[in-house]
Image (cartoon, rainbow, N blue to C red; front, side):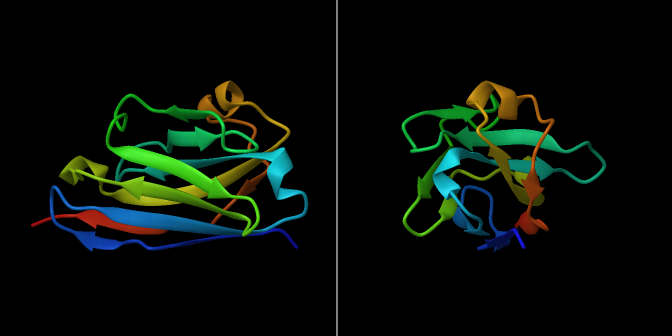
Length: 126
């Protein structure tokens, strides 16, 4: 059974930082483009960041460029999202996603994901 399990969320003050982790129980992990999406309360789920099979390329939504960093450790089958300079509007449920033999551009469209995590809440508030 394929599982994506997010961890590392919680309550953070504006300007603070968190690192989210996504532990993947999945065969041939390096053949999956991995990414993060989020759903802000009252809004549709949106693309945040994606990383290529071996971590050589990344793609970010304009809203998080310069503040968020995606990375992966294929030996540990884990993908990370470092989130810095957090704003109240970053408050959302963050989801890890996997897309088999995909591309960054395809994942950036936000459709056709093969697997999703259950999501983890990040709350940015004073």
